[in-house]
Structures are given as structure tokens and as C-alpha cells.
Amino acid sequence: MKPFERLEAPLAYLPMVNVDTDMIIPKQFLKTLKRTGLGKVLFFDMRYGEDGEKRDDFVLNESRYSGGCVLATGENFGCGSSREHAPWALNDFGIGCILAPSFADIFYNNCFKNGMLPIVKTDDEIREIVTSLEGVEGGRLVVDLEGLEISAWDGGGERLGVWSFDVEDSRRDALLEGLDDIGSTWTKREEIESFEFRNRKTLPWVYG
Image (cartoon, rainbow, N blue to C red; front, side, top):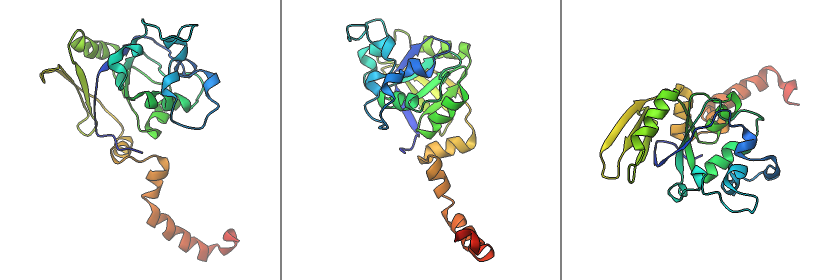
């Protein structure tokens, strides 16, 4: 997993509450086990019309977000079924960070497992962040995980605002080091092998 240290990207605003995982990626796209190629069907029913063409009125279809973005949205994001394809699709589109007042628990955990950073901010804070970049040419949001800081910048390098955020230390460290659950476990390899060595001597029958 790629380490997450500092993300700089435009901010996309989807002011919707209770966005469930079927809205993020509909069930007909869950047949694959590959994590790539899912970005094109992200928010499929909202992004595309019945003719298969992109809707001009959906925020992520704006050209400035084609290279990825930070997504700001409403409460209870990622609710519904626990499909891991949801963070896969968001990640494949280029969304490395999501701001929301609250997240569904399983989705929140899946984000960290897939190298994404979900940040909890209040509705008022999210609107303040969004407003700071409205109409700003070349506006960008910088998410600094090590410094636990979000900052908004205009195209000329002037900082427009700064906001702090909190992430559990263990999750923060894992993202900074690019470790998923397996990678985090593997950092304890010597301790695990030492335990197994001692345990084989104490309970040899367990190992056949």
C-alpha cells in the first residue's frame, strides 16, 4: 500500500446525506475482484444518463476532477452493505481523502485498509472549507496527515484557511507507513516467530 503523507487536490462537494455503498458502486459491478477499473463506474447511476453519457450536472464529471480530488460530503457516508468495492472505486477514481460529519463504521474501517483517509468534520466546518474555495481559480486543498492539518490555497500560492483534524494514532501511523492489516501484522514478525518457536516446544501436538 502506498504511504499517505500529503495530498494536494481540488475539492469536490457532494452535499448529500446517507450516501450508501450501492450509490457509490451499484451491485452489477461487484463481480470483479480487481481493484482497478472501478473508477469509471463510481456513482454510476448519478454520473451517467440512460443513454450512457455523462451528466453535466454531476460534480465529479467536471473536468477539473478527472485527475482526482478530495471529496466533501454529508453525514453517514458509506452506509448500507459492507462492500469493499466502494472504497476501491473511490480510490481508483483518485479520491484519496473524504470529509464528512460521520461515516458508516465498516466503510470507515475499509478506507484505512485501502490507503484512504476519512476525516470527520462538522457540517459547519465542511461548509467553511468549501466556501473558502468557491470561485477560486486553481484552488486546491492540502491534507497533511503528519501535521493533522487541512489547508486551502488559491492558484497563486496564498493560503485561504487552515483546519485541524484528528485521527487515531495507530491508523495515522499505518497510513503514513503504507501498511494494511497484513503489513501491520508483519512488522511484528520477529515476535510472532519467537512465540511460535516457544509454543512448538510447549505444545508440540498442536503443530502435528
